[in-house]
Length: 471
Image 1 (cartoon, rainbow, N blue to C red):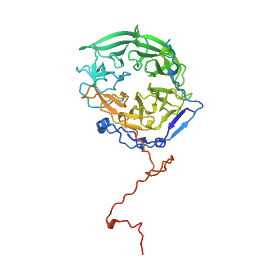
Image 2: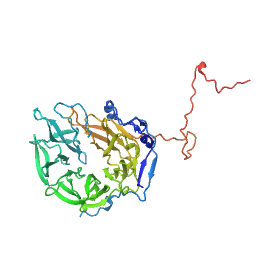
Image 3: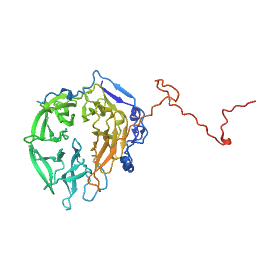
């Protein structure tokens, strides 16, 4: 048995091959994106006007023990990681899958590789160059960081909190790492060093804004590298047993890193916590069932909310839990859409001790493109919303007040951000006792009927019931 819970209020509809319409939890024919014509209105509307969904029924399958959601922060001792859009584009641009758009942990800067078609016909291949976005000013703006020759499409860029951009390039059998920064009309480059390995993958930006880490995965172990922020260039911090991937930060100090680890000899994938302040000590983080693949997708250090993908319910499902909690991991039915993939990419920060109230932004990929989903654990409802044309799918950042910033770039706008207020999860109004009657503390069996209002009607339309004769 598995230590998980499935919210199955819409299970019957899902099993019957039906889906949930955008903005509703009622079953319908298929997963379709919201109407693009309503995008501007939806992005500027702070309130959601769709009818509230009924409360889902929860069916929990309990295991012999609770899932391992141990909070590694409690063990810390002294210090000893798109579906392409189809907007109208200018003739100088190329319609290509958008590379990763990476945002710093504080939401101030972002970076990506962007491509433009060369002007000469014989050189029709796109020329890639890094681009840095500034997101915390009065208006967002982009700064191109091209060098003398175009970048390879397989290069990775990572923004730092000081505005510089780390770039990883593949050069024959090694990977070089450099910092790029604007210098007036040109671009400055500071070479940090190189790492000789087959594959090197940059982890998500560290919360400290200064350090940058990477993974080099081998057949039986994974190297954890400090590639920026160290005193002497790239430095191997630890050789971790097994094949590690993913990368989610669990604290605001950049000390606790969660990775998805596969044993060297094969076996289920489990999320583990790596404490960088204690010599990269590795401890279990998530174990829902002994043979299940349990991966950590996203975490909020303030509330402890965890977004998990696991096959413990029988197939891959999106679930949530709380760091350090003994409660089962829950797999909401509203996050299960046939013919569409749902991936979380941002969690509302600042909700201390209230993980159930955090708004979560999700990327929904279907046959017709990508659109946005917004969900809260206590709401049990997936709001499906349109996105601006040219949205850099899977990217965005929440404010503490619940406003989601969605970066986009289309043929007319090279750098822009659309602001979306998280829709409210409407609940049925509480039913109170009629005036003159005391509160009994019992739940009513139905809504209180409003008092009837007498109004005159023509004699020919008067009802022929309820009359009495005299005499």
